[in-house]
Image (cartoon, rainbow, N blue to C red):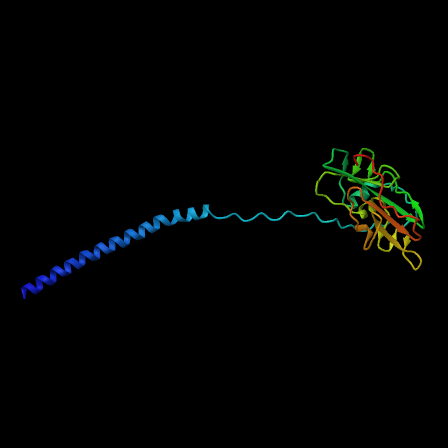
Length: 225
């Protein structure tokens, strides 16, 4: 009887010791995990892949409203030229060294005859617009402070205060016997002529009514333009 009780007491003591050892091991494991988790998290965060950069945005063509001028040709230079430039969304200020400079050319024909493009559009003394004319040859000069800027023909016509759209050119309107046709480098183009983009050495022709004997497809631009 005493031997049985003694054996049982020894077994209970061993089991108690094993339980305490197991508990200490479990506590040690939990402490180790708690210690390592922040370090593992930091390591994971330092090796994460950065998000890819967004694609470069391409500047959109400016959207402009037609000018209100409905007079008949020839169209003269308006008095408030810089006001027209502001209305066209063009920068104005003292002439400076531009980031980009180029020229394109405009011909306007009314019933087969060339109508001059007014000189001095976008020019008022020492203050100038990004888009302007120096003479009546039809050469359009663009001097932009931003390399990615884009321009359209409608902006020039706002400076000129001459209404331009698919069915009108100033006070001239499309009817049964008169069409308004636009050409770019000698090729007819459809749509709104005010949306024609101005790019280096582009030849643009607007033809109202009877066309000329030859539609120009190029222009002799000065060197460096």
